[in-house]
Amino acid sequence: MKRIHIRAALFCLSVFLMAGLGTSVGHAGTMDLISTLVNKLGITEKQAEGGTGALFQNAKDNLSAEDFKKVSDAVPGMDGYLAAAPKAEPKSGIEGALGSTLSSLGGGAAKAGGMLDLKSAFSKLGMDSSTLGKFVPEVLDFVQSEGGQSVVGLLKGLWQ
Image (cartoon, rainbow, N blue to C red; front, side, top):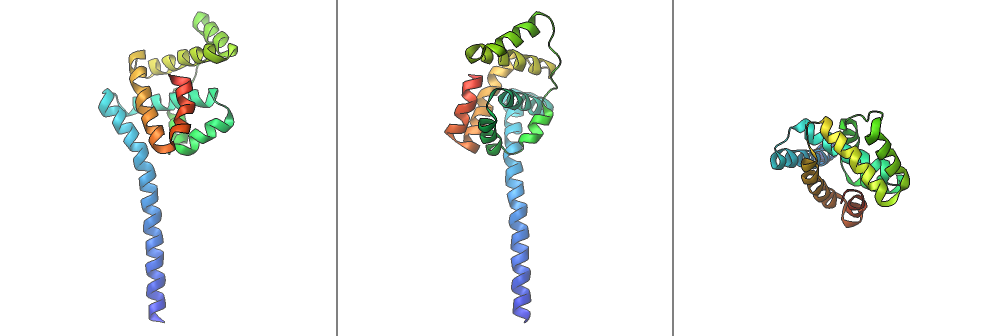
């Protein structure tokens, strides 16, 4: 009887430890992306999180729901990234009219409109378009390592 109790306790302990390790690994991947961006680009953690969120918000806005789900499923912490993205402000003036017009045209024009939105989001975070150009390859590398070539291909179509 004592053996059964010991085995049950060991089983429960192993399940508990495995669940804890699984959570840490998922979180570690997310932290690796943020750490990589901070270290390679010389930006703050808030800028790294917000910029990543802006990129994923752009993907959410421009991919089909089915395609974005593939991306979201592959990227640990997606909800946190989206929450960290700078809030979009109503577009006004020439830039707003241009972005809206480009986005409504579809294809390459929509991509150009999305890039204007990304530049605006990065500007709100205190980063410029050259930082956006350095940011994209790092996020794409991360997504490829998490989700593979088919998932990263969805994003390359938007950002490159």
